[in-house]
Length: 195
Image (cartoon, rainbow, N blue to C red; front, side, top):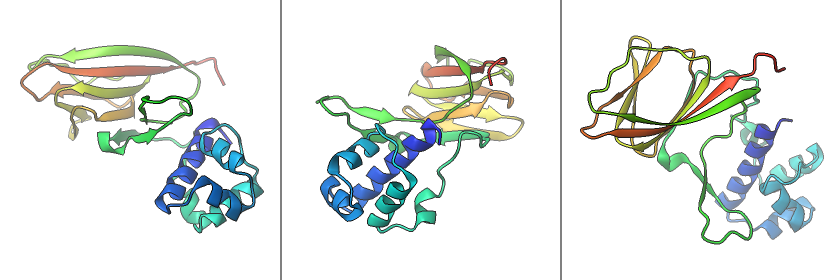
């Protein structure tokens, strides 16, 4: 299993346990494992064996098919993912009071070079559709942005929204607000020599 799948499984165990109002200790007792092991699994610090994982899912009283639904392996292609601000997963780390973490995306994207940019768009900014040899992550810091893909597909993004897509699809952003729109942009360029 790859890291991204493990993180998805860890997050889902924690999410389902909290949904069912079960404490870490209660889940550990039902699954016949230690409280420390559940904590380590939920924080992506250890990999459970398949037998232990199945016992934990059963202890949560969830059908295995339901639990693993939508957990994706890194080799599955995706054209585009949009996440709204209210969909980001809040999580905490031990011994870090006052630290508010938000996991936005967990997506493995081959071997790549990362380029991080702040992009500001003036209200009348214009650019034709472009293609880049990179996966592109966009996070709207301020403003309203319309993203166009191809001739007729558009997505409206507001402050706090984000998007991940394959830059080989023709695309361009447009500022639909009255002030400057600002985005955090991260490009993941594939290492053509990597495996």
